[in-house]
Image (cartoon, rainbow, N blue to C red; front, side, top):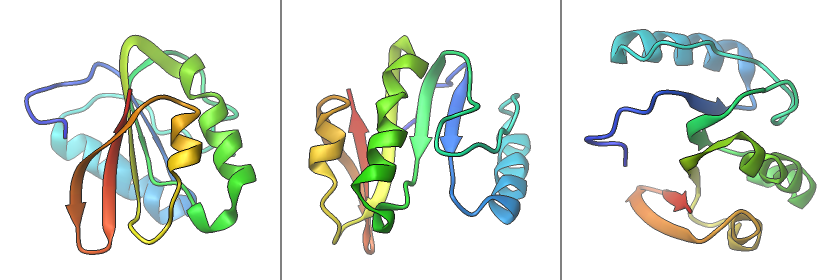
Length: 118
């Protein structure tokens, strides 16, 4: 997905925050990506413009959470920015993704799908 491309700023969202925030910080350190890990409710509390937004939304929580999450993505993306969404293959979130842009499947593994939205 991001192979050959080093984003300057990345926004990643997560719903189970304590362990995931620590894992995200460790992963950033290991990959040499400088930045700040922010814990927020969907994207409220996240400011700035990002090259890449990585998201594994709680699709089981329903359309309201997806609408809230994806509703601010355009405000957070840099002009040439990209959104990558990981979700369970059995859950159809295409309608929510199309509100952001054009979804394209860029990867599949086991029961999960990775979609780029432009």
